[in-house]
Image 1 (cartoon, protein in one colour):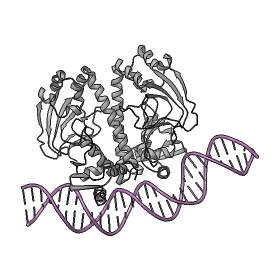
Image 2 (cartoon, rainbow over the protein chains, first blue to last red; image 1 turned 180 degrees about the horizontal axis):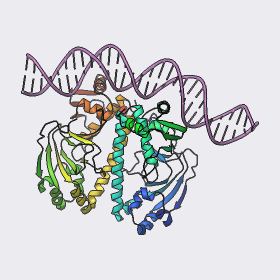
Image 3 (cartoon, rainbow over the protein chains, first blue to last red; image 1 turned 90 degrees about the horizontal axis):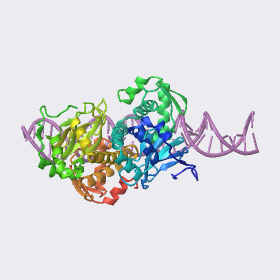
Image 4 (tube, chains in turn blue, orange, yellow, purple; image 1 turned 180 degrees about the vertical axis):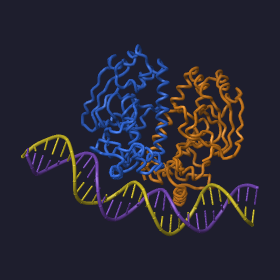
Length: 246
Length: 246
DNA sequence: CGGTCACTTGATCGTCTTCAATACCAGTGG
DNA sequence: CCACTGGTATTGAAGACGATCAAGTGACCG
């Protein structure tokens, strides 16, 4: 529940160099992609690069939204809390994900790194200036927001109407897609999040997640080489389960 | 499950006149607000006004997204379906609500009028042209999207982690706010949707919704003058229940 | 009136949660 | 090398919340 796990989180900051934007791993998947090469200098000048250790909360719900972030490496979990500690993870943010789309002046969610994370930090006024200067970036941001909205609606369907089996199946199918970025879905991939994170994402308990995964394994749908590694054995069967067809 | 309830839905269409935009009830709450008076003619020229009877599905999930809509009167429910008929309502769209923010070329959800609805219809290319011509409108659309995203996250918390009582309390508090538009929350208001709609919005069953409402009534939290009318007797108590504090 | 539809209320059931114990794994220090 | 520790995952048994099944009520309408 603390803002950072380490007493003094070693968050390293540095001004972004041009090269960092031009060859940035995140660029293809990110809003930065909206800018042509020659304008990347303006972008780089507006950002501060940060390295964040795993377990660090770098956005806290309710705090003033003085800055926005763009993830360039690693994975973060986004979540909301109830006063008694109940938690709902609203999404996992990967490379290229833009954080802080809120219009409000306070963050509506918290964000915590589940792996070491690198991100670009934009101060609010600087981002505002960038968007005014480059309408293409604002257009791209609208696209991103629209896509997230569609994903959010899908997640509402999952949370409101799917069974535990269907939720897990949906989650695994989704992960297999997202891990592979733009490529086609992969059948073997890592799960950087814990069972607890998965549970809080799917509106279940740790035990149900664990049990359902072992059921899937005994049924031959998946394999679990290690706790944080997953192999899909029957992708189509898993997909139809996810879609509520089984 | 049918696209329209009536065999031949009497959907009335007409070209919007300038006056309809300038004095439109929806304008203050809508993206149209981004345009100054003198440009409203361009807006009106791009839209077709439609009147839709209650029960009509005017957006169907999976169909080509050839047009977008802006509600000027009435209320619609937005929902997604699973193959076996399970339904999740992702939101209720009121006056001023913009529908169809998807980037995809097919709709990700369905929309059905729960009251007689009036809406402005924008064809996809015309909207694109409008947004290119008036960047302020695109900015406004981004704001709208960001706000909806925040609401969606709140709803995920509700669906994933709140109890039936908390869900109903949250719903009633939300309704009391939304009915009153920009004013402060109202304690007495109409519920245009059925118990079934409420259930599908909150991830519950009709029976649980009904039971929980009567519990609230016997506890003195609310009153139910008619099935589709509601009076909040103890707003703060209901609010803390909604926030998980009880 | 008879019919439909939405809502309410009651009894039983089942899925997922809760509680509890155990297994596992990596890191640390004896 | 191995015992110890803390965090994470698995597995089992019991319990609860909401779902399902079923009956009954009331409003509206032809």
